[in-house]
Image 1 (tube, rainbow, N blue to C red):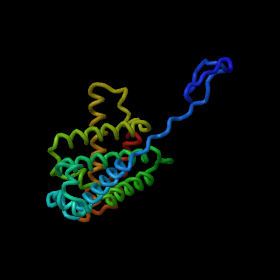
Image 2 (tube, rainbow, N blue to C red):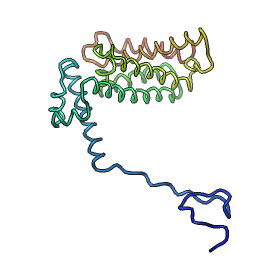
Image 3 (cartoon, one colour):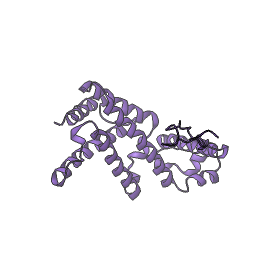
Image 4 (tube, helix red, strand yellow):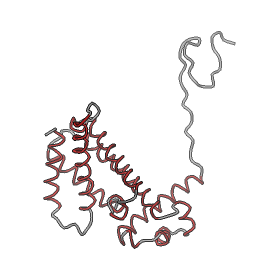
Length: 228
């Protein structure tokens, strides 16, 4: 047997023999066919639920209608979502994850000017419209649910942290006392205004000129990002 070497099962050993041996990555576990089928079915339910809610409104859509739209049995749908609130909350979580990515795009904009912020806000509104995601994020029917309020609170905190990586006005880590309260309120109020506008303006019945509101709101966002 060669001196100073042992079989380590493909993992590196520091200080063994001639030093560090190459690390062989563990193979990624692939989902089983059953797991893949569940993922596909859940994605279909979500997509069809959004379509139903956008078309008919949350109050008028039942789980049975969503099951028909998705081409699955009612019992199968209940295995994934025992109630409509459970489905709505899952859709909200999905939307908020997508929203985090939208705000990360804002952080990466170079150069950052008013025109770039205007385009970012227009793109955000268009994405909400295309994905019909506003139906679960901003509907009054879900506003009194404790879980929904908790999700939205975590979303505002997460978004503030994302923006705080680049923009001083949203960097709250070093603050305390009254200044922390004021800056947190200012940051979260602006984030809520942005989200609510994109949700409302994505609907066909929005009553204001979108371009005018986008120009107005984009200027407010730009000033906030500059720390004004």
